[in-house]
Length: 323
Image (tube, rainbow, N blue to C red):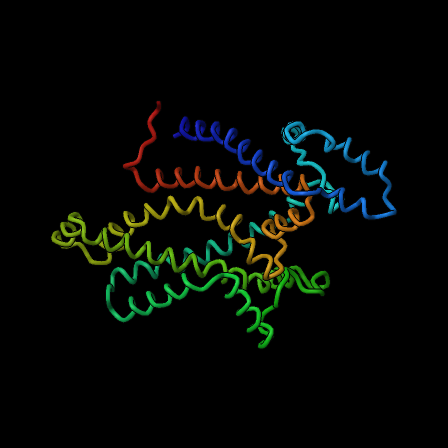
């Protein structure tokens, strides 16, 4: 297992290089740049703009720019955000925390609801409970996230029960420690429900299908023939084997949530990495976009490595042999 993890981490480096290079090329191929907008400001001289372009090597070709940026990455220097006027790492550090807590909350909300419902539907196949949950799962899969977010924000504004956007209230600094935690949790409810709804619907259907396949297996029939209690057959033997394919999705789920919640973050005004990516593109903030892309790519790849480790942990039949 250790040698397998080392090999995967070794191949992580060229993969991140390729992904970051394509992102760097994409943002550079867009017409104009951040300094083109500054030229319209009469208070900023041409000499000042040229000084910044030379300082950050933006007067050179794309590949030389990428080389200098990559060299600075080795020193954990992600560059300078021209829009925020601070180092990129400082911007990413704050936004990554905001996205991470939202992703963790969505992940817990999704899996704690989807797996028990999927198991229940498989055990009670074609019964009223199964049909009701299946109906709502199809609704969850069919409703676009942006529409559901707008609907919940509208209901929140009409009832006043939940905040209608953002991450904190205007009087956040005046609240106590526990009051601040509760304030953030209230703002997190709507985006968590929006992100988790489609995930619950999909995972529920997958868990139901896995359970039905396992319950028809010969070893389950044998376990019942030996007189084992039905709860032990289902929740010890069947669930453990049915959940193995789900584990491969778990590692990538967190990174997918981090990189895929951009639209929900924008609609709900949640200051995370997704909304930051759009902001960097719109402002053509080169180093901020490249650093954001590199960070989300790293989380994506590491997530799948974690999935492989978890799968080997829950399923002893899987072994990673040396090559």
